[in-house]
Image 1 (tube, helix red, strand yellow):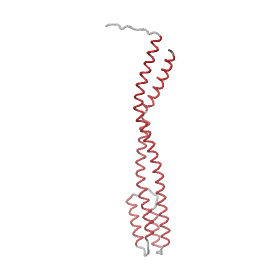
Image 2: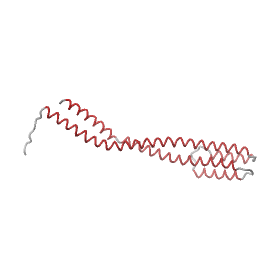
Image 3: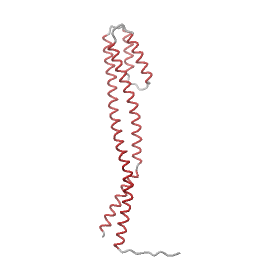
Image 4: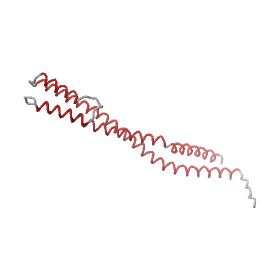
Length: 194
């Protein structure tokens, strides 16, 4: 075996070697950071867009709920104008209340059955019920629109949660940023020693 020679550096050579070493680390870390950070930036933009979509959908959900209840109230007022038997009025009143109910435990099929039964009960009245039916239709349409929006909102919330977890898990970007800053500080120090 041949013994390697050990070279002793003078002060300027040592400082130059330290500068080269820190510049090399900065370059390596910076390229990885830039590649990861561009993905992180687009992920953050995607998260922000999802948050806005969720907020907008939540506002619209409230609007559909208000529309449903308002149409139900108008239907009840229209029902009062009709000359119907108290038993018929009570039955239709109950149907309207069930149709515009805020309970979430029933299925779309159950709500559709309530709507169809209510429409049949209204049509059996001996009067012009076109306005009343229009109000009931408006309430049912608001229910359907709100239900569809609610399903989409639930899916958006799940996706948003996944994206936020993905963003938190990306710790390498933070580590690289700190390493770059550390090597930049060391580079400034060593360059100042020249």
